[in-house]
Image 1 (cartoon, rainbow, N blue to C red):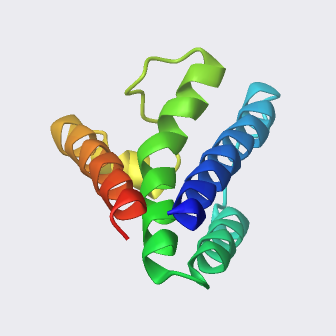
Image 2: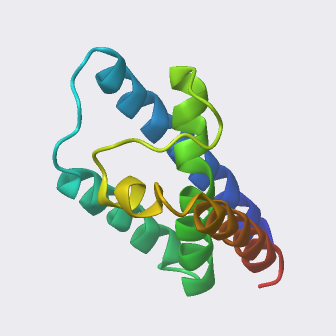
Image 3: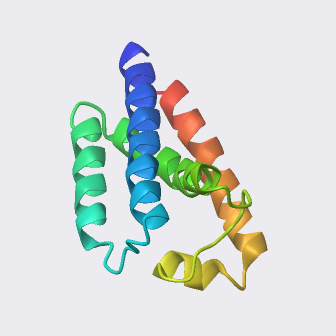
Length: 118
């Protein structure tokens, strides 16, 4: 249980720091054309979290998915469910807002259940 709480807290901190870094770039007009380096960093983080408990790694990925965009939107002063125009994720969900919100809520619920039930 302590490992799960530690993983949850580390993931929350990682998510907030990632959103801060991205918001600083975006607010300076340095738009992110390629998300490849960010995907590699995030995947590495989830793998490290999951080394001792694979479910914590999965929960970390789900929690990041649930929270990142909303923290980034808050830091940028955008609406809570705002979607950008560059990332493939944003483009896909831009015409499916109901699905986007559903995915976010399911990711959050799943992450919480995984963190506290393993």
